[in-house]
Length: 192
Image (cartoon, rainbow, N blue to C red; front, top):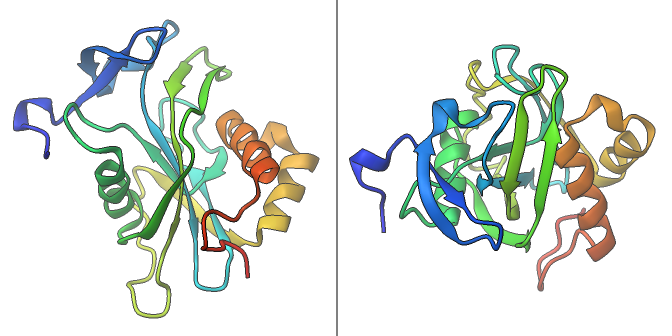
């Protein structure tokens, strides 16, 4: 079900058991005392099995300029999380995604950036594909993404191992957990 216009800029607050318990304006939810809320994270693959890393725009409130997974976001009240993933792919990267696969449905984290802004999210993690042969090229929204880089999963794991301090804390945790269960999901593979 699509969200109503009134819920267009709200995030879903969660109780400690992960159940919805209210809403809050997205623009002001991330502070030094961020309540637990619903989010998602997406790792995007191309047709060659490479994964996309993005560098967060310098104007971002939390972790500006930090390298991270392809994109993250918040489902609106009443919005299916997979629909939110598709919406953010269009907004942040100017593309459509396919083969959505939720590989870490219960991922949850809390992290504090150097300025004191807290991320406190239940954040299912998706793998998806971008059709680089037939689909449009990336068109990163400069308000969201400063740079992009495609790399192999092995190169991404090496970066996480060598320099976790240079990457978003959620990406570091996610990559380690995805690596533990394998970059494969179901009958699809996300590797070359």
